[in-house]
Amino acid sequence: MALIVQKYGGTSVANPERIKNVARRIARFKAQGHQIVVVVSAMSGETNKLIALAREMQAQPDPRELDAVVSTGEQVTTGLLAMGLKAIGVDARSYTGGQVKVLTDNTFTKARILSIDEENIRRDLDAGKVVIVAGFQGVDADGNITTLGRGGSDTSGVALAAALKADECQIYTDVDGVYTTDPRVVPEAKKLDTITFEEMLEMASLGSKVLQIRSVEFAGKYKVKLRVLSSFEDEGEGTLITVEEDKNMEQPIISGIAFNRDEAKLTMLGVPDTPGIAYRILGSIADANIDVDMIIQNIGHDGTTDFSFTVNRGEYAKAQAILEKVKAELGAREIVGDNKICKVSAVGVGMRSHPGVASKMFKALGDEGINIQMISTSEIKISVVLDEKYLELAVRVLHRTFGLDQ
Ligand code: ADP
Ligand code: ASP
Ligand code: MG
Image 1: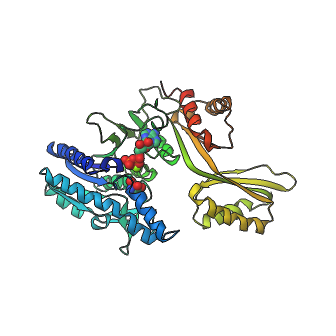
Image 2 (image 1 turned 90 degrees about the horizontal axis):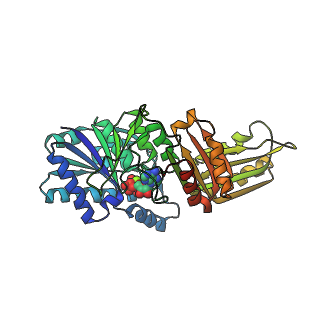
Image 3 (image 1 turned 90 degrees about the vertical axis):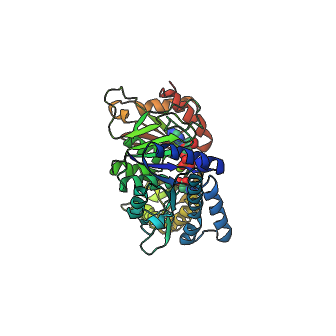
């Protein structure tokens, strides 16, 4: 008998038929004698609808109230799935995050999980019930409802698996595993049998939304056996996220291509080239709680320099307004921005032992006439910022260049 946590994403529970299908899958695991804890997302499209509703009330919705609204999507699915299970003779009980309770900090809309009470869940499991928990949500110490950021049900699933010391955490979604790149953009993408935590962390942070980055962090930290699988297929092992690189296999240099459309670039031109400038610019951005991604400062000439960085596209206008103020204080010349950019990245632990990956990547993009605007590298990834219109082309070209479609 194993304790398994299964997470079902939005498309897997998109309508009553699919929820019934999920119920049948759970019943099969149950019949094999396993204890099952299920984490569900909102039915697909629901979270977007709830956010749109909130925006009709307030252009920038109050974060506490926004969480009160968007957390309801998951609650609907938990009750429906419990009914679906009861209808086929499987005893089940639904819980909101607060009922469990999943305790989080009080950062509304991107709260972090602090602890999970096991008591209710253990009691129900021991009584032979399937436990169904609403993903994406928790409560803070004052009892306020919080949510964990978009895609946060993955993190709920992994955190529950860690707290319960589950034998495995299975993430069921609409693809049958982690691919060399998004199979919706490159149909030739190949499913990976395994991928290391390190690589999965990079892929997730660079835009591959198949797993929320925090879920991967959690799984790595608490050694959760994590697997991505399809809820639409009955066979298949999916993709296992592993700690160890497979020493028996010749490692590919690049394991995957990730991309993110959600980027914007800001440049301050003619900044006085004096100590403390980077802090004056980025400090004010950080104070407004805006995450900065890539940063470039050019070499100075004539006592001035140019300073560029990227932010999430949703925070572009806010960052621009802050920079206008800083510009006046510093006496900089001009601010230019571009919110039609994207970031494309090649990820692979094999990069450590193989020089020349960057030049191969730049040549492939150059041959296609794609101009690189910014570059950033780490030990196992190379990212480039490009005009958004080149996204699909760049991803396809790099996928082919690194032999990932073979
Ligand atoms: P869910 O609703 O089940 O959480 P998501 O839409 O959040 O599903 O994540 C699954 C989607 O992630 C896939 O449909 C796919 O388009 C996308 N995706 C992006 N990069 C990858 C990748 N490297 N491998 C697999 N899927 C990917
Ligand atoms: N329903 C939430 C979202 O759409 C959480 C999730 O699906 O993981 O972001
Ligand atoms: Mg998701």
